[in-house]
Amino acid sequence: MSPFDDHQSMSALEHTDELVVTGRPAPPTEAELTSFVAALRATAADPAPRPSVALSALLRDGLAPPSLDPVAARPRPARAGRSAGWRNRWRSVVGLGLAAKIVLGAGVAVASVGGAATIDAVPDAVQLPARAVVSGVVGLFTSDPVGDPDLPEPARVVPTPTTGVPTASGAEVPGSTEVPGSTEPPGSTGSDGLRGLNGVNGLNGLNGLNGLNGLNGLNGLNGVNGAGNGSSAEGRPGTVDVPARPAVPIPSTGLPSGVPSGVPSGVPSGVGAQTPPDLPSAVPQANGLLRSTTSGSSAVSPPTVIPPTAAVDLGSAARKAAASATPAP
Amino acid sequence: MLDDFDGVLARARVGSAEAFTLLYEDLVRPVAAYLRGRGVADVEDVTSEVFVAVLTGVRGFDGDQAHFRSWVFTIAHRRVVDGWRRGGRRPTPVPYEPADDARSAPSAESDALAALGEERVQALLGELSPDQRDVLVLRIVGDLTVDQVSDVVGKKPGAVKALQRRGLATLRRNLTVEGVPL
Image (cartoon, rainbow over all chains, first blue to last red; front, side, top):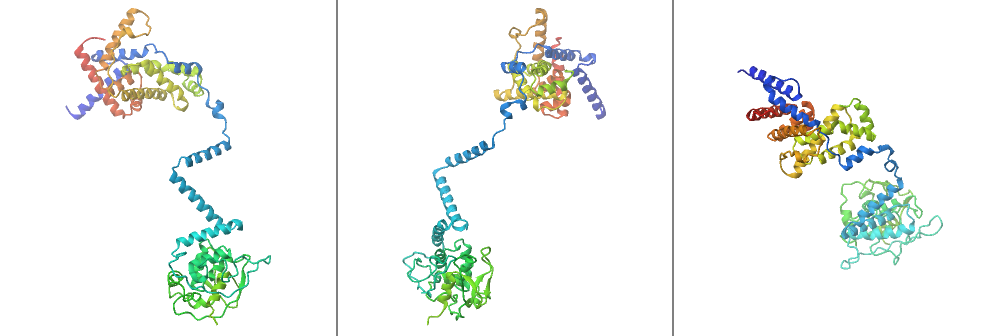
């Protein structure tokens, strides 16, 4: 038998099967199978089984249309959704473990204090303590050995006493007068590098604790110690135009001109040493008063040299740095 | 077959009890026969479960009468398969006991003859494989085409044809051996 014959016979068999299954007249040779199929088909004419209770209810009552369902169609008030959302969040917080709650609370506290210290819209009564807290925390985490009693006390530079910075109302800004024995904490002088900058920021009550100011302070260390700090006080009450001071010889230690020789090696000298020696603005401009051209947006932009005769808004750090750079008579 | 299937379906979608009854009466007997042919023990309960699912889900159905028929048998087929999985074993043929059959019949003679014939039919079906039983019962009792059966059982039409061919061949062989007319 050829494959064609196989296909022919298969097609004929399928055709016969189709006739039997569908109840159409089949060849007489399929009488038994035809009788079986007829008996099987007759089972579908048997009486229906009794419906269950649920099915009886459906057949008797039907179903309510979905659009006419008053409960489902009632819009849920938005306030209820919001309160449910807050309830879910509160449940998620309550469901946390003890350690997670502590971490969450600490995070909220850090965010609150940091925000209060950096957002200008916060009242000064809140902002100043927050800045003091942040400066203390920043001092702890910097490489500065703040508060380490084992280290020798750096030589304090007695700056030239200056008058208080007048404000618009005529009152002086607290802490703007830098005299020995003031409330300035140890290490708050400009000669203490980072620590000093933090302290100056805290005393001046400027916007200086937002990290950006610290970088400005670093720029200032490259040039005039603390001069960059004054940039954050631009346009704020309590700033004063400081006249430029005469050129000062650059010390051979490689430190910025504002840093005295008694500075501990760990703090500002490291900052000064990080300044690449081939930077043109590092040393030659040290005698001038620098002001960062950025007003807090970018701390790494090169400083702009202000002519000595130009009036510059500088903070007390700049004045202190300029005073310390002046050779003692 | 319903004459105005589209109208009945539209009314059933909005929950009309009258439409539910028409759909139920049109298909309850073939479905029950399919369940019996598949060896389901509690045909009454499973039939009710199938139609509760059909009538509560008819809002999501969209199609003509042939598709509706396939859809109803698909639900019934899945109920059968779920029953097998719950039992964890292959279905065993349930011997037909005429004394346990509470269904009414026109007369005692016709009841006895019908029961005898149905018992023989169920016994012959029990000698087929489950897939062959599925295909043959759906084709004969459900009055479905090969394509509809392939949709219900989830197999290709060629596989359905092969199952049908092998099932009928087994029936031919067994009927020839027994030689007893139904």
